[in-house]
Length: 193
Image 1 (cartoon, one colour):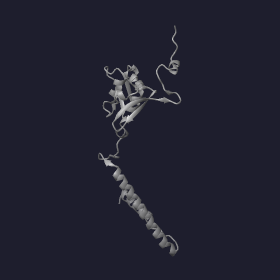
Image 2: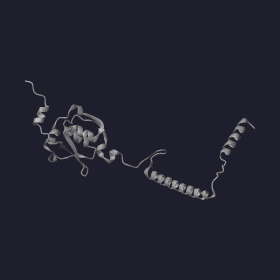
Image 3: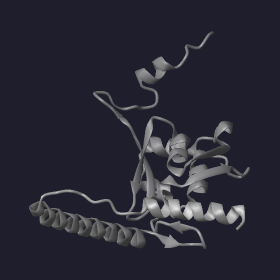
């Protein structure tokens, strides 16, 4: 016998010795209760594991040899305005309105008609596109649409018809901000002259 064989036999003997049953002392009445409790506990554990495996099997789809995914839409598929965009505006896109339409072109949404817009929204959409807005992202489409018009407006979304519109934000007790009112003029620097 070689030393390898002896070592193997010694390891086999040690592992078999660890598997030996040890006697447990208990009262005769406790044996029936313990066996019933153990069987009941084992059945509950087995049922719970089966339910968990069934839920996991339904919630996972194999997409490769070692890969699975949960069959759910991504957040941007469930809410189109959460799509992450990164865009550079072409030269022909030169107003805020054209930029909004350009951002919406592949989203499935469209900008509301001018007849449904507040006059302030129409004025904002006709303004020249600021140079800083020529490159946007990465950000959500919703954030990009809000960046275009600034903090004075909020986004109105009609998910049924997939139409986007803007509304002037009403300020508590003051109504909507209007161009040329005292607050707007006070916020502007005084002209030197």
